[in-house]
Length: 249
Image 1 (spheres, rainbow, N blue to C red):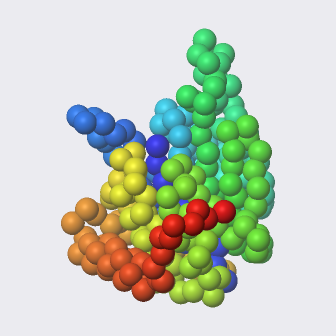
Image 2 (cartoon, rainbow, N blue to C red; image 1 turned 30 degrees about the vertical axis):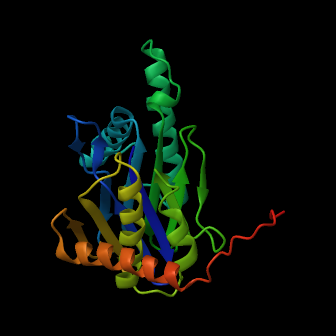
């Protein structure tokens, strides 16, 4: 399992992903789940993946291979005219890879499924984001659905729903995502550090700030402790429940 989130803000896009691929008593490994293709001044395209590692890596490898040499760019994310067309290309590639498991005698059921978050901008279009399903179909971010999650989504979703603001700064967005990731890590062993993040400023047409939050990051430790203490303080400030002899409806 994994956890990846993409936020659409008024000022641009923010991406964050964990790196855990296996989790067990004696089997924990990490793998980067975020990749970016860019042609400065023309396009920036970022992809995050969750699901079967062999499936997601096959999809990325196919997209990468088609993007290396101009003679091989048929089709490629570097020549598609819009983000919508790239979403179609990525969806078709994902469906092709999953179908290949079935053709090879394997069952293309949930064991080989993957979901993807695709985001970026191609001039002159606006920045946007898509959630791509294993079947290859997809939905686009909107004012009603301004962020996407893939992987282990349930533990970190409440903080996003309550605290997301489309006008927030990139700094506040990363803080919000780190709290969401902290809640997920504490609840599920299959999500783990380090976390990769990236920002994209609307209409800049170049990759923004990128970085990695490691397990020994002092800011994350402070944030995690502070969030836990803030929750305890908020809980203590709520009115107490009174037990009575009467059964409550």
